[in-house]
Image (cartoon, rainbow, N blue to C red; front, side, top):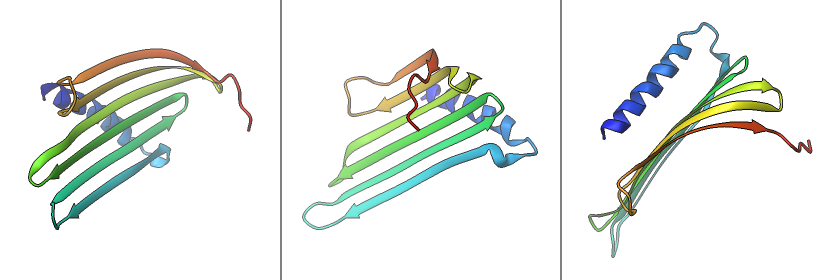
Length: 130
């Protein structure tokens, strides 16, 4: 849990720095919220929240993703998942760049307690058919 709080704090601090700028037109994002509740022979509920926020300025692209899902059937939990990542891209040219990505996943219904990864890389567009 401490890892989730630390990651969330660092991501929030990064985005708050960008949000204080005068020109907010570089922001874009999506938010998805869903809930289902059924009653009858069995009672089922599920809730999903997903956000994707992106900030582009000059050669820098900041991307934040948050996804959580929980479900229960007849009072017993059947799903409880949290997945989040932060990605920072730097465009070297229009078709290539460098990136760093930090991700965290906590799924109570898998064989692991939680997992995190830190990735660095280089990307390049090889084919563009547009």
